[in-house]
Length: 292
Image (cartoon, rainbow, N blue to C red; front, top):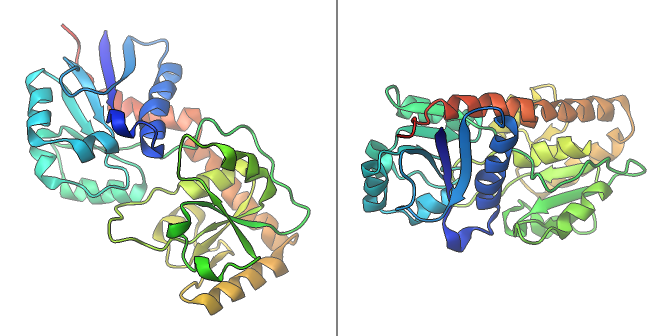
């Protein structure tokens, strides 16, 4: 039997990063590897795991001290750090066996920073498992921003054209009920000084709903997933650009260009399917030690 522990800070267990990269990845592992000789569980104490693969979630890493990681290592654990979008503590790296990336760009960065014998594994940021099957309304153009409103670029210029639906508290699921009402998701972020690598979660949620995305032409992650020919990767440097972009969306709504964009976004569902996630997780679980 090989044990895999997802370590979460108990005080932050309600945060989205803890729920999705802790509790829900643990659930996905239980489903995807139910026929294999593994046990999967959450834990909240650095002293608990022994002879296990310990996945350190963002919340655990933020609270961790060097002494905590040393304790884990002394108990014969293999440590995998999932910084997600947090700032990476490079002073932890001598004690870390594997680095988990949430996006291809983060994977490329970590692979360059930490060549073998360190291991770098991409585990794509999946769509919240609590979101049911959704088919968004296509009667008329409806643009919505789902997330923390302080992170929306040009928020003060949205007016009546873009609705803001706060979706930052993982314990409040009311935003999920509104996903069906919006056929275009605004995904233009105002970057904060504390930002690390941001996963393409808004893109994957839009794909789940059958909506299109409005993204900045300089968004490298969007270009990587959607391609250079995606029609709604637009210049968004100032409020006038936002007005022009909304005009482009209005003109394109219901046309072949809209259908092309929608098909592009929907194709991203393959990235967060159970099959795709299981394949990515397989590389991580190969690091789990045999228990004594």
